[in-house]
Length: 378
Image 1 (cartoon, rainbow, N blue to C red):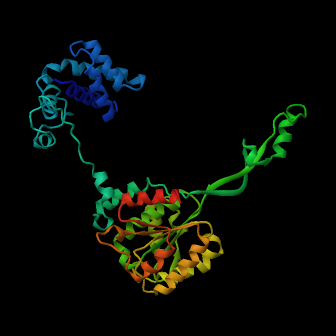
Image 2 (image 1 turned 90 degrees about the horizontal axis):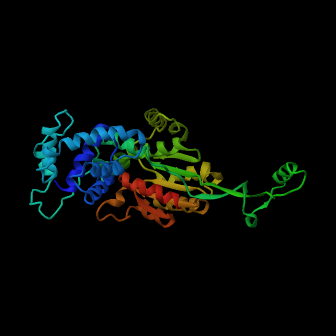
């Protein structure tokens, strides 16, 4: 049995015993076994222990797994590929934990001669497939799985200079902190042995999320609402609005830690869900009531919309120009951008695009991950 197959066998038994063995450790073990005498029990033992055991309390667990491996070498000696190793497990270690040796295992292994070439089996990940799939093609179960993955996304804006002064050790960029200097001097008999300084700190920029909830966005609205709920509930400084035939602020509803309850409350709050699209009037309402008075000033504004608008392209362009004058950056997330042959020809999208700093995709989990990175560096 080659060192690579021996490492697979020993790593598998270690996992069965309860030791977490990543793929990298299995590869390192194979390299170690190639350098020692495979017939010397002590050398093989220490090669495995040095590469698979990371905590002292797992040594006894490893000892048990290694004893099973060493006693079962005869059964594994004739194996020439991973499939035969699995079959040998089923025969030599009949404890109900070995995987069945059926056609599925054979399908994952190259049946070509293994004399000079070692085959590395790579299995596909359903999570990776889900990350790349378009939200519009999701099934119910895939939406449920995506909801769990969306909770791992962290939407944080780039940092801006704050007016609040913080202690610092860089006097060139700071001003004297008289209070802390005097307080320290009292501890040394009134002598100011060490001068203290303060300088403006930094804080994340406010993020404003404007979600188009019109009928044309229905295939993507479910995933986007989950994304908004994760962002709003994770931290303060994130505001959320729904854009349809009217403007609706849903920050309070989405702030709940219970995602399902938060989304249900937001759905009840938005009266024009899956209705028409009037981005221009809705954006004007945002600018007049919230954005221009202060919420959008210096903020990162993220608009999630396909750009279809019945409210008039001229009005939308005018309101985008007003928003661009006060916002730090405008990011437009269009799920249709990933479509083959897409061009921003819709009147609303064409009118808004000149005032957009970042025009990105939003059709999948991978696209939303890219969005978080875009916002973080804006």
